[in-house]
Length: 85
Image (cartoon, rainbow, N blue to C red; front, top):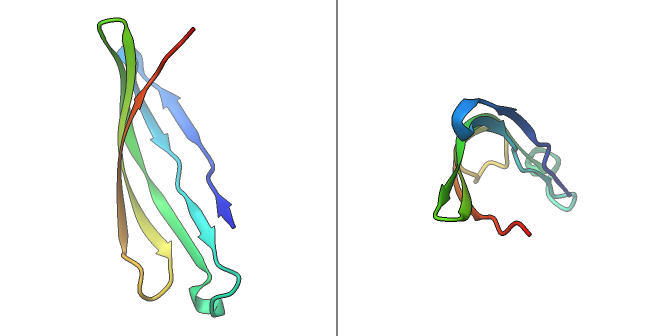
């Protein structure tokens, strides 16, 4: 199972604060290893290169609940090229 809630707060000049943790559950694993639940947030900016809008963000998440062999932290960097009509 995968859950990904999105929270976004827009700031001036194309900046925003965001949180979109990717929570997973593996129902075939032992009960203590079923869930990965990250908690955290990040920052992003929407800008243009010529006429092309680009969205970038950087976020960090602590895995509050996780299988025993999973990393404590996640770091996510994202670039999105937007092609509006």
